Image 1 (cartoon, rainbow, N blue to C red):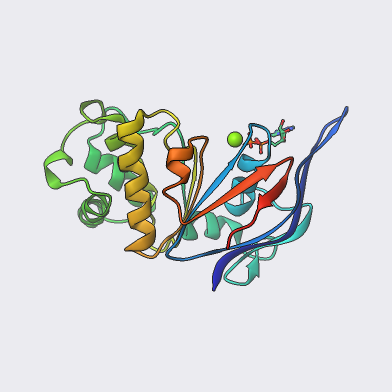
Image 2: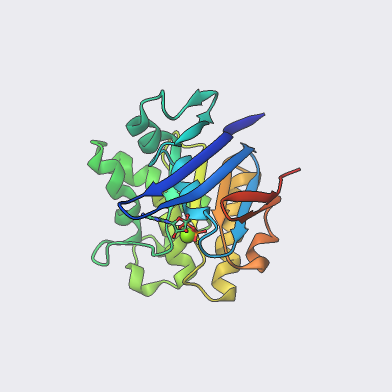
Length: 224
Ligand code: ADP
Ligand code: MG
């Protein structure tokens, strides 16, 4: 059932002076077709969980398993490149490239022919609700919510089944937040992605299928 699973995961940051136990024994699973919201006070460990799920870091104890294989055992570069799409708070779009070019660019970098990259980019833009009329615009000509949807379209790799987003609506007003969250819900419910978002905003969290609350590196309410 779960495509991604955390099994008794611990993580700590260590420097000369102190050790911070950022994730303190978390076990939970995430399924395709669902959207999860991770909430909790600043410093509770949300971003650390996301970087463990993204394969950017490895647990100090326990495992993060994708399709049953631990991130410690797999080819993590491939996992990061092909299996997970990561979306950030800042949209990081190139201002001098059009919406279509921004979306096609990573595919071209990976060696895809420009015409094919643009065809796929247009498909993904439509999947996040951005119609052809805006594909030739520059990012500055779009609302914040539309820019974030371009960033989501760009992050969707052909193979990715998981979307991870840390505060994807953090820079957006309420209306723009709503359209970004609706887009993420649609990607889960209609296109069968497993979507996990971190948010401070309870109105955003309530749109999710499951809300998971973190406190001091632990989950205090488990998904049903
Ligand atoms: P959140 O995203 O919920 O705000 P984080 O996962 O960023 O929480 O941080 C969890 C804890 O780990 C906090 O106490 C934070 O100060 C600490 N922490 C995060 N990143 C580092 C780091 N690079 N070095 C040392 N401590 C860190
Ligand atoms: Mg954070």
